[in-house]
Length: 329
Image (cartoon, rainbow, N blue to C red; front, side, top):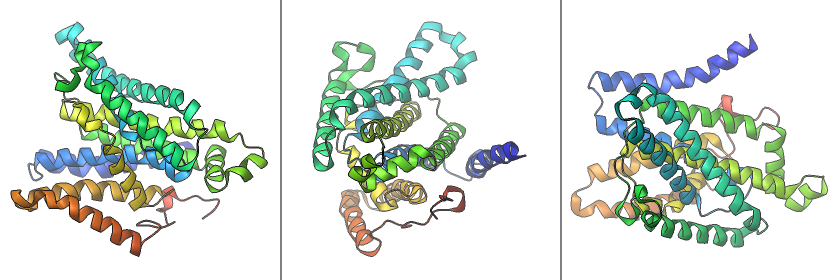
């Protein structure tokens, strides 16, 4: 019975999120454009949950999240492009499996790179770690710009084209629900308590016998893996990748979402992700063309006001019951 309850808890959010959207889209009540924005919000939420695991729960100040997002996007897009190019019409029969494999490969590539980058950089702390990850983001942007010199399929500065559109509402919602379940179980496990202990006081955590460097690598690698999966979904949603999409400045967008939602708060991160995406697009649609750029003035003002009124984020330490830590709350 416990096993069945856990299955139901996993399926119910998927049905509640994807069901209405798919019904409204099929009935032509909901504009396809806003369906696509909903999918983008799910993708951004997955990436933000990964950064929250890194910064919110482990306390690692990372400014290179967009680079891992890009690694996952390019890896997943390249694999599906090569497979479809090799098998042509026959590839249709295994599209779902290939797409799932490409997403896992994108997450795996981002995780592997994060582990390699984390081994030397995670010995740094605070601002020094942020500068190191920021430098890594700049390096990856240059590599994306010149990728066509060693792998022409990636397109380089011209962008990668010819990506098949595979991302749909069921895929994005299923990936989001899976990300929520994995991170929820992780942060409530002994690993999660070790990560929180490192965030609160690394010296005290080490004194209690926690291998702080090992756990920091685990937290950093896991968080970047979610960014890689989100990147794979993004690549197959918009079917075009350009290096500017993964510029190091894009890391600040996800960082602001995590800060707005509350560090170490999953509910706040989810709410802030959807609010961020829909607010930006809503303002872009509502504002006259000559005033569209003013949204980049209003958003920082909103951030300042939120930090003054809610310094611990939108939800503070409160979580919805399903995501609540039963041990400490």
